[in-house]
Structures are given as structure tokens and as C-alpha cells.
Amino acid sequence: MAPTGNVRSFIWNHFLKLEKGKAQCRICMETYSFSRGSTSNLKRHFKLKHRTTHG
Image (cartoon, rainbow, N blue to C red; front, top):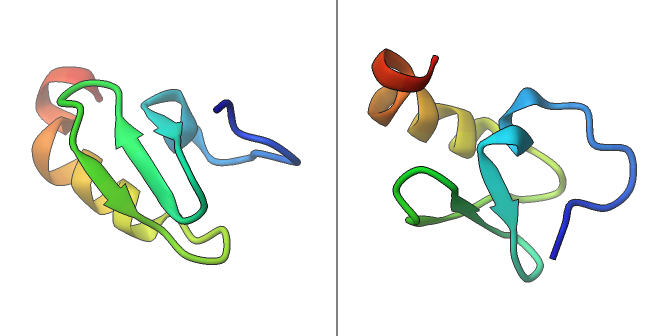
């Protein structure tokens, strides 16, 4: 499922939105939660795991 609505965060270039409240990293294929549009958890994963190679 592609992101819907007004998607503003750069993080959606690196995550695939799944069912409500879940997103899958396009790099490592791990699944993470987010709530009410907050992408902090996704950004944290990206910064800690992928920033040096994809940032």
C-alpha cells in the first residue's frame, strides 16, 4: 500500500506504509510501528541503522 494523504516526511522515501500503524523499511525489510502520523520511530531506525550508507 502506498502512502496516502499529504505525505511530507522524507522518511517515506525509505519506508513502505503497510496496514494501519505499520511501515516496512525498504533497505532492511524490517517492520516498525508509527502512530497518528508520527514518524519519529521510523526516523530513529533510519538514523541509527542506515544513515552512514544511505544518508
